[in-house]
Length: 359
Image (cartoon, rainbow, N blue to C red; front, side, top):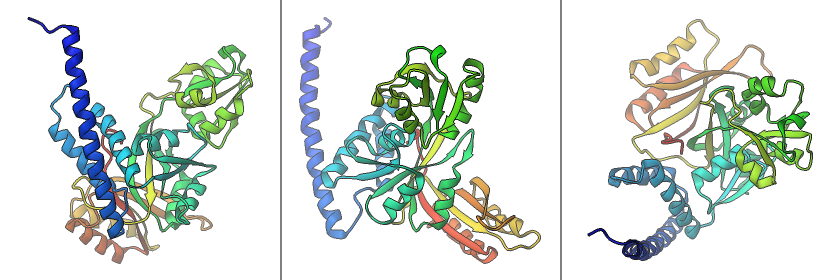
């Protein structure tokens, strides 16, 4: 005989009771862990340990919850646990409801405290001077390439990359008005405008285009203006009381932005790591080839290599590299030692867990 709805609901209530008890037991353990970390001078946020927790959950989970659903649930459990140990302060490229804000919330969970900054440089500044614990900045977009402001600051900063995350960027047209036909001006961040240029040419060819500091700043600018629209996230529409005139207007459906967390300290090994570094080669024939041979001989996979001009010195370049592995891995450690001998500059930007499922 099949159980009645009332019986099923009673079973659900009993499970909820058990879950609440277990969550509070877990929270008490988390508080105890926080005390030990405090006594040892350890950071509360440990991306390597959190990566191990999610790997463990993957092993335990046999459905029907999907991997991404389980990750979303535990992201908030971990966020709350951190908050019980010590409130987390996160700087991001603002204002509120920017894509950087969305990435920061997805990575750290909503229990953290988020502080919008007027520019990427300000995010670095606040973390460098210790006013904020961690920063979230965009580093590259799958369509528009690297974010040069971030690369420039990574060259100079003493901070390290602690984690990475990938955010699928879905752009929307936002306005106080109610129809696309009324739109005469479009505001957004330069990269967002570039990502939607074909859609704009097709649907609003006569609109005046203007740049803003961020997509969220653009949303603030058009509030109350029925003939103006912003390109930004659906979160920005709800945050600033705007109408969603069109969704998914990016030209490429695979539009994704990579963000990194910046902060102090060195990351631990997890077995699924990435290391970012910068190097420069001497002005000699074959210098780059000799530098890259250090990776090739050890079969170290380079996830990315990109040249970046040195500011104020024409035709001189630095090379940004992302490699698979941790700087403490034997092969990577050996490679970096050799690379130091073959380059005129070598700076490790950080070793950190490789992103899984975007987070």
